[in-house]
Image (cartoon, rainbow, N blue to C red; front, side, top):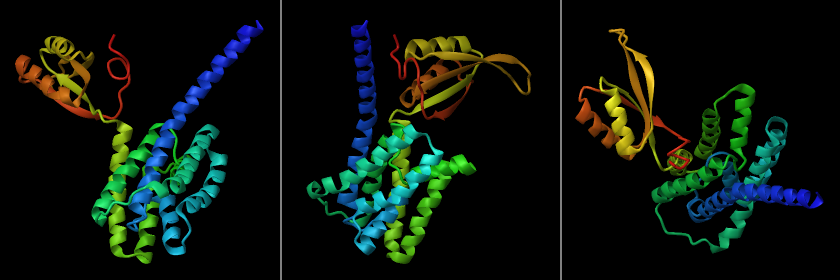
Length: 295
């Protein structure tokens, strides 16, 4: 009995350890990528960033306070505030994410080559790389601290959307930079922030873009069979009613990837050129054929 209990405990420990590694690996990868980008593109070109990191960069440029120390100091009151408002597990992983970035900044600095780029390219590619790094961390279900936590707290307490909160925090950095730095620094920083936001969204949504289709046709059965046979996608029939004719008919609903859209159009053209179809963006799909195997 004791052996069975010990074996069970070892299995549970292994499972917990594996879950921890799976959670920490993207945090470390994302943090190192962001740290390398700050050392290679942002700091050498005098660019800023959004949120807490932007304020820490100002401290670096104006007062000579190293970026990692500035991020560490500014995050202390934020995490103290988060202890009262947020789930401890999320806060713990976010703390690990913040610490990973803080430690990665000085550790990677001596080994990072500084490319000779003009300000525009530095702004664009710093936005791309920071967006990828931040997106990897957010996709793991955590954050790297800073304004991410403040945005979640304002959402919880005052129901202010997270996107709006992040925008306002970034706006503070931009307005401050207008008074403290050249106008071009603020403008290039805006470009970097915009690129970063777009890339982060793309990382969170995934590289595969899925579309939700709704098809209204008098040949629903034939179209559904063709989609299942030719594309290997499942379809769902929904009951609909025409607003003018009051005629009841079945409507096809189907999710495909962006490369399968032309094939669906060919099927409609073949079976019912008069069919009505509209396509909607789908940010995430889970289930058989997408995140689960077909068989």
